[in-house]
Image (cartoon, rainbow, N blue to C red):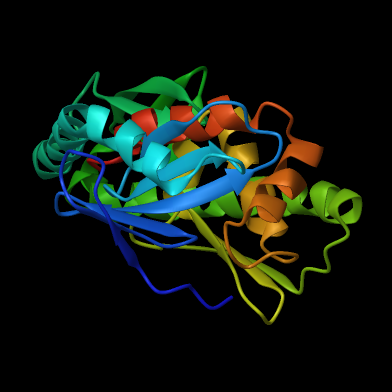
Length: 250
């Protein structure tokens, strides 16, 4: 979908530029999503620092700008906070008792002198072979990737039928700051870190990506499609934006 040219606008505060799908103000760029079902405006600061606004379809541009102006201090604070968290996300040391997430729960680490596999999850604890500590991160990433592959394949199998989506392949890999993606070739990909999220949040990631099979952008019709299958998608999306940073640091 082609974007309309940006138009300058001033409401008495900082100058802003607005198009149908984007708003730029005070050095910040927001993706704008409008919906006939939306009754209030909401700003979300994503895990990556990306910014988005959801607003009712009837809200005029100057009112949208005024709303953002009132929230600028909060937005800048959140952006800086996420940047600091990403820089300071503690790296795992793979020591006894250290916590590792899996499907939203933290499991303590036990170091085992002798076991057949490098890593296992037993009785609520991750068990890592002591002699494999030097490869700890690679071992955990491999374990998470295998579990994520199984979990998301099952989710996609159930959701794709209900959402009318034909999926050629489910892939799990490192996607950088993206939780998932849906390709034009019918392949859906998920970040291996998505298996660290609580199940209801990981499910939102799956529904979100499958909805892109119908609408590649984040237009109002896209969010309507998401809402058809997850009526409470807003709180899940907000939770992910505010808490997804917990999956960093491995």
